[in-house]
Image 1 (cartoon, rainbow, N blue to C red):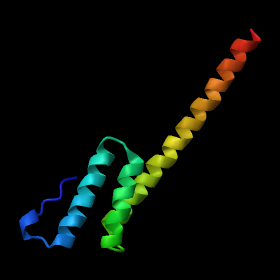
Image 2: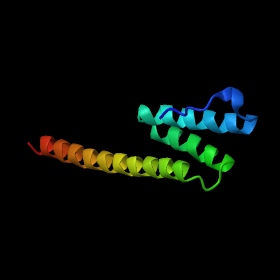
Image 3: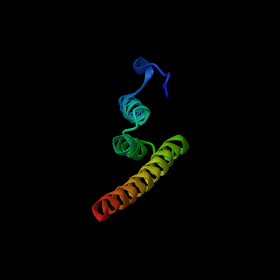
Image 4: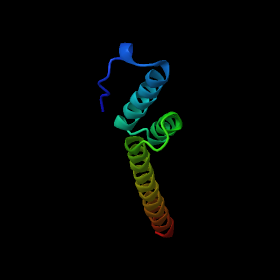
Length: 88
C-alpha cells in the first residue's frame, strides 16, 4: 500500500508514522507477518486508535493464526507418514 503524502510537507512525527507504515506494508507484501505486525504496533503508538492501523494488525493476526494452523496440520501429517514408514 503506497502512502501518497510527500515527506517534505509532513512533521517529523508524521514522517516517522509514514515510515513505520511503509515498513509494515513492505513486510506484509512478502508475508513476513511478525515484523509487519511489529511495525504496525509501533505506528499505533504514534496514532492511537487509527482504524487503518488496527485493521492491518488484525490482518496480520489472522494470517499468523492461519500460518499456525497450517504448520500444525503439516506436523501431524509428517508424524503420521513417519509412523507409517516405521511400521512397514
